[in-house]
Image: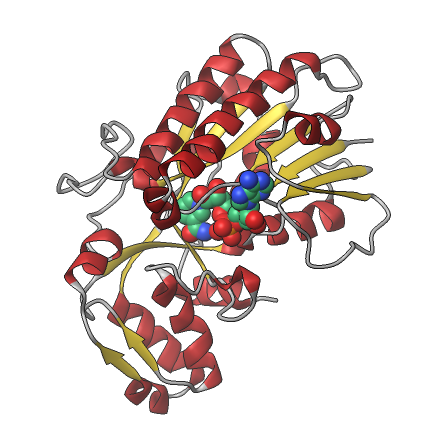
Length: 322
Ligand SMILES: NC(=O)c1ccc[n+]([C@@H]2O[C@H](COP(=O)([O-])OP(=O)(O)OC[C@H]3O[C@@H](n4cnc5c(N)ncnc54)[C@H](O)[C@@H]3O)[C@@H](O)[C@H]2O)c1
């Protein structure tokens, strides 16, 4: 028996995580109750184990209904994206910072059926590093967020570590890189996101449709498929907590690829004729934010069992598996 809570469950990563929890359970145990919290739900869920709670995570009553005792694990994915949080400071603060603290404080009252503190996995972000990156990023690189979104996510990491120290939960924050391949249509498409090209490359070239890429071909990004990302979230919720570092925070391992390396692999997969579909119209701001990443070394995360996709072919397979 296991009760799992997922916030932001209607999002791109949340939907994939929910599917996996229902199919495979958590840590070898079936999930018997899955409480989902999001602003709204596209449709009622067919699985009787699912409880959908529509509304804001800023609402303590709604959070209380989601975290109804006993709780084995909470995956906290609900968030206001970087651009939107930058435009609306109060909204970003309320959701990305204060609701994270509220949720952690809620867990003081909540235990597993066996009386243990629940596991808590927090989706942090590579935006904590900011734009002034050193020639190489590693696990000792000091974060220096360039956006309020990254600052609030970094504060969330500290709150997770502090809540763990206080015994409210066994927390772990994972810094997510660019997760692909978000659908190009529908509510979940993130169409307005400046990083949308990273996902659109996969879908457009598979469908034989043109794509305009707002960075140069030699622009370098950090990539992970949604499948590998979900593997890592599940691992963080089940690994022996005694093995977690004192910061309770890890950088997810990534594949570091240029856009042209990805285009080459997609053309090898779908046909050379796809190459002519890609045009480049670099935008200096987007290039700086999403395609100027130095090498990233994550031996500590890998020793814990966190993984990137391994190779570009697997990245493509897992990014587009539906
Ligand atoms: N996808 C990526 O590339 C990426 C990269 C870095 C970090 N992350 C982080 O990972 C997490 C999941 O990412 P995603 O791509 O699935 O994001 P997403 O934007 O697709 O999903 C976020 C979900 O949170 C929900 N949400 C927003 N405000 C809410 C509120 N007030 N109450 C309840 N729910 C609310 C949204 O409705 C949405 O369904 C987020 O925390 C994000 O910051 C994602």
